Length: 104
Image 1 (cartoon, helix red, strand yellow):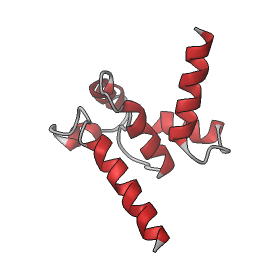
Image 2 (cartoon, helix red, strand yellow):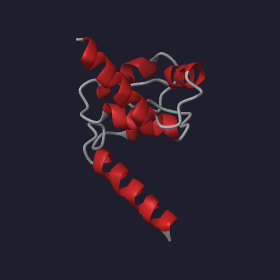
Image 3 (spheres, one colour):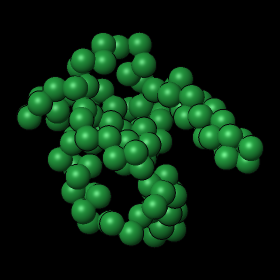
Image 4 (cartoon, rainbow, N blue to C red):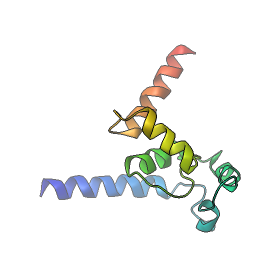
């Protein structure tokens, strides 16, 4: 039963950020384009309040297609190759944010 509680908690956390996504009311097909059009599609994410959560979710779940968290398919693949040790991208991004804040 503990696993069900964890899964429920994870689902609730995901629903919380998804409901704040800037792309939520748009046409999802705009984010599932190919090639150079992905960079243009990623501009939708530029001012999204949950950009990091979205990108972390896509990386954690190894989502292969579409623009997620302002990252193209190629950018996500590169991050996964560069950091194979990462088990939680949300934690990774948060540690990077703290490190950057401390440096400023």
